[in-house]
Length: 224
Length: 184
Ligand SMILES: Cc1cc2nc3c(=O)[nH]c(=O)nc-3n(C[C@H](O)[C@H](O)[C@H](O)COP(=O)(O)O)c2cc1C
Image (tube, rainbow over the protein chains, first blue to last red):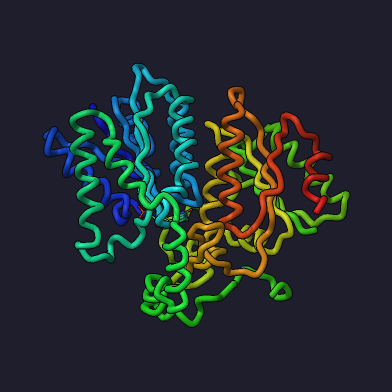
């Protein structure tokens, strides 16, 4: 097996991660016309199969959503599992981290961990793609997500040709790196209008839960 | 003080690390603290499914019904939390990470700019500060410690609190941990 992809989202087939993998593969297939296997790390009942696929892959790409500034717990478990596998030959590894908050900065700490992990597991580290602002892409009209999907498709195409990430696209995807002062000010102005909470409020109202939005059920009575 | 200890040790029996935690609990109690200690691997705990029910269906409540609820209650009503775990491939255990992910139930979906970055607003008035207690691996180096410090500092920003310390059972005595935790 050449390239194997792992989807590390707990949402599995309903994940944003899946949409990004699909775009990546649509570009990949323009160059190499083979089916790239995609495994779901959250399919815990298929662990043996997953680890077998990992063991036999020459190049592994792991996509996952940022969860509290790190990989999700199930992805950590996957790392613990693969650390026990003896690699017969050298393997290459690459990562794609996508997050809810818009700034790439939020993911650069897990990136350092991933680079170190590759070193620790004696894998050749290809690199890490970081993309913020991904929560909600399913609800966005296609004109809003077109650029994102095109970039991921180009990323896949380049990867098929070079077994590497295109650094130009990588740096494009990492924007914004941090919130500029202008953006921050704009945010505080807009948040007064309630527009920044549009996504959450819409969903709260749809579920008839808007009135309960400030509930804090786990607090002991006397503490509030 | 009320203290919550989340023990992420993946070993469920005959573990030096968990013995250390047991001693630590006793020492905390001698000093008149109330301690809840959870050995995560011994509990029924799922991972966060990312369903957002806790944010937009039943605000503040996790829909996954397992042992996590007592942890949420203990955590949010504590004065101090100890994240305790041996390191596995350079980071605290998957058990500890799984419950950390689920702590998102304690936050609000709304976003504010804090520390010049986007972060979620508070759902509760107070969030406990925490300490990090690890056991090093044979190959743990300065870089690993830096990564841990960075990531848990990020956790502190997200969870409206402070990381008080990172200490290691390899170098710190139970007494030292108690002192570091209780000297507010
Ligand atoms: C438990 C949990 C923790 C999260 N933590 C972060 C975070 O620390 N930073 C961030 O930018 N986004 C965070 N997110 C948002 C996800 O990264 C984002 O929604 C992502 O697009 C989900 O992708 P998926 O559908 O593939 O799972 C978190 C989401 C969940 C459910």
